[in-house]
Length: 271
Image (cartoon, rainbow, N blue to C red; front, side):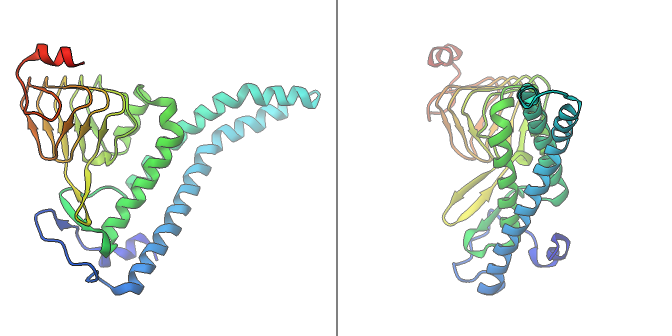
């Protein structure tokens, strides 16, 4: 079954304001849910295999060419392989980011905004979200550790759907649901910041957009919930928790789990 053929069955995600359906009332019954899950596993395996193959194509060709040009003992050929291993891996990670983002975009495996998706129903929008999360996680695992905090990582986030301004510094791999994130220019996101567009609660995945203004600083280890808006020039201290749907005024300082504070010196001390 193709993704195009599934559109008639998927429908639109439930609005976040609507009550959740009771477990056992999932559309299509048990057999349909099992079929959807099976197709999800098969399709994500096929797409990830293709993405990895495309990412390996260029470094693989470079390796073959280098070996063909090497005339000498097996030790010399092994030395050539050792010398090109790191550049080849870097090329692979670059290709992985590009092809993964393009596949996610082409297949529509993105997080839908402002919906509630009951886990028990295993609906197509939920499974599309899950497939997109698998591609994000795989890319984060192999490429993120190499390129985090660099313009290359920011480029991947943009390509995967995030709206990010210029001069943005992202030093974390714990950002998901890229298509629901908007980050203004000049913003700094510290190490190990957790941020995304979904929240699992009461048996459902809830989604909302997260908007961060210009010249914002989010300290190391902070957690930013869904539906949060942070005004221009605001500061979120290290190890803070910003609950879902919180609005932080422009220029304010946010410490711990308290209300926003207007004392900038307090934020500096907390960092």
